[in-house]
Length: 210
Image (cartoon, rainbow, N blue to C red; front, side):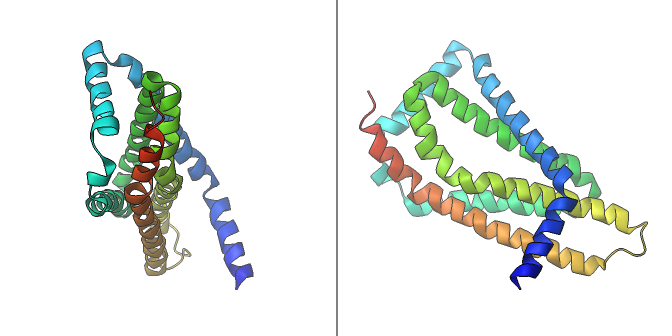
């Protein structure tokens, strides 16, 4: 059993190695552009964002926030993203949109981390490690795998129309949907981490901030 799973996983990675490189490249490019985008803010915009961050860190008591509502919001957003990518994978025209979503997620992450580090220096690094990193240890791989899987299935639909020897479309669709379902479960776990672990970590470290 283990041997067959290992063989199937190896075949999957070999067949999609180029797609993984492409999706990861767009994600990293988004991060770079997001980090550079911090420098485009004017003084007023910087002040508004700094005020918002400081208010959240030092004025709002994390204990007063509903972890259940945060989890619901985070899980819903994560599932919407995966299901959107799943749907786009069913269409050929969805490929550029999938790549755009990956780039946008990278941009948002790069901008957030870049802003925190640029404005808060070492405090920003600590905030990145406690507030952003935990859930993204799951969110980023989930996004990459979902993007690759969706683009791969979409290109299969194109190839399948011209290759009569291709595997049954129904079987490929079931495999595609099952993998996306597993990614939804991981995305849900990431939402739970964002709701219950990250706020606690923020509360523990902000007491040491000046």
